[in-house]
Length: 253
Image 1 (cartoon, rainbow, N blue to C red):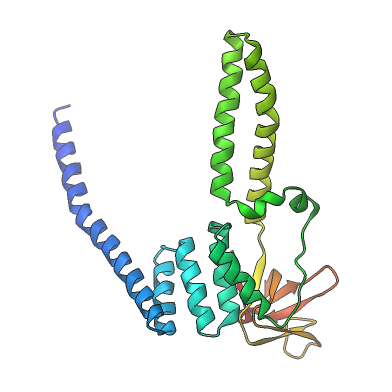
Image 2 (image 1 turned 30 degrees about the horizontal axis):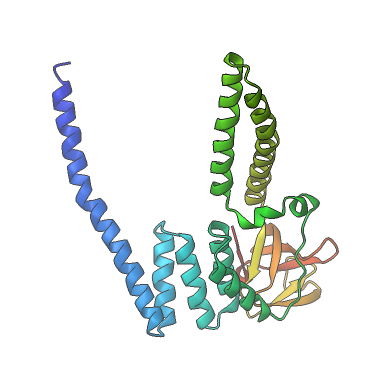
């Protein structure tokens, strides 16, 4: 116990010494973000892309930064990477009107018409497109708290209104829990990728000498499966698939 004040003093000194570094890191982040925005406003899109990219690599990959990066790529006529950045931003802020408009505009510029494949569960839980995983988690957590609290109170108080409250909460709790499970599964198994090369050859096998099946163009969104020798097996549908070079595409997740 005699050493406790000494430990507290040492811990306090360490915290005080760490504060300026944290403050400096925050200031550096804000400065880089401001400079990237200024470069974008000045029409220097390559500098803006580099600045946003540095922020993402340093762990500041927020939805706004990916959105700004997508705008810079779009202005720089790099359609594939613009769509990739927009898709990354949409994971975090799916209801952002400007983001959804710009993403739809960018998709309209692509040369390949690839229908989006949706499973039955995705069609039933249609609202999952409009909420992020953290939003569903906190919604389920709050409903979970209310539901189990109501059940606990019901053990000690047999009020009729409490019974009907539990009956009302039960389907809401189940839907919220199911939505969270499906959304989490979708996020974990999200295999979408965007073609970022101007043109990509899709071949029957992972080798340049294999048969050319078809070509894809910048901005096409596909499903990327396994990798082999620097090639990726991609799928457009159950009947249409093939191999492309790994550097020709970027994974959304």
